Image (cartoon, rainbow, N blue to C red; front, side):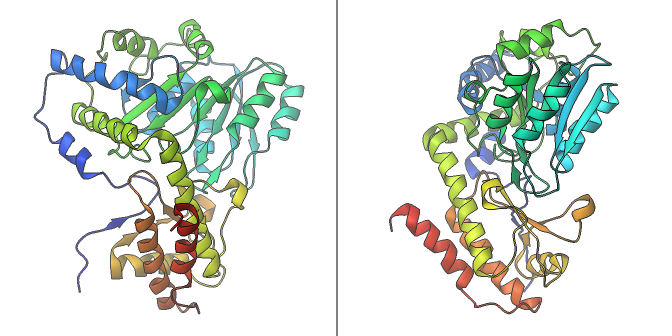
Length: 385
């Protein structure tokens, strides 16, 4: 039987709720019209709780990488010293952006699959008092690692006056993170992951300290000049033409998040993670990360007795299930399961059921049904069924 529809379970882009699809299908409006101003006025206050921000959360038209670049270009000058914590491909991307803007970039590199160590950050800062900013990836999408941002921020505060700048592209909207509580100065994200939208919007939130640095930075900038966005945002406008259909969808996403409640959303993602990890253990398929560092939004799997690319090909060809492969030196060695945003326990049971069939296709000896049973046991333990 030919498979006509994909079951999208990569760590972004992610499935879109039907309500959001319908919202994005509304008739186009003028970006300088009163309707657009009204839309932005409705969106603005609903974004703040998602980021735990007191200051305005700015929306840019661009990918998540544009938010990373905006964080660098608005807070640093050429020659500034910064520290980047690299736990995978996207931490390395932060470092590459810093290099491109002639920032003196120091790196603490961890083995891929291992979380950043706050003690190493503390030791480094003791010997480098001039660090302007510390860049951290909250959820490292390439490995499924969740870095301990709050603990790292505490060490930064103890040792320096450096800004704490966090990539939350694959965590915001699914993982509990809060600018004020966690000691973050800049938190950025993108639309296509736990925020349940297509790619094309970037989000930028900052503390008062972060905004003070942005205002004082003299580096030339144009499209990514956040001073322009902040000024216009206060008047419910954007400095450049926004992605209006995505903004219509964003309003509906924020409505959905309000209805479910942020705490419930965070707990749901933890449940999805725990169901997935329990199932893979029951199937004797090794995980890349330890439980303490496992992300609630993406799980990385490192098999030792079958080819992950063959598995991905089989489950996609037979069932339409699309899983992600590894990146850079992990290409061909791992596969990654996205379980964020528009994803429920029933979806995880579907993923695991398909994986069981795929594992048998690649010749792995498993007890059929054991993965689904393990995931269901975790769900029952939380749901009280």
